[in-house]
Image (tube, rainbow, N blue to C red):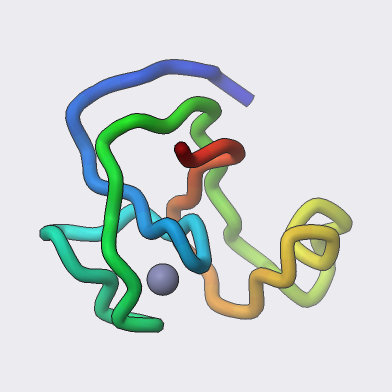
Length: 65
Ligand SMILES: [Zn+2]
């Protein structure tokens, strides 16, 4: 896992990397202040996805402020 930080929006609710200022999954507001890039390919067989309650494959951040 590569930890990096760049200008991308991350949802404050589900931690998913979003395209804009509102998350398309849960409609929560997004933040550009986040850390730890996480790609979930197979949420049903991923321990970290279960721990973070992620059920949809995609890009996520570990920490969002
Ligand atoms: Zn969300």
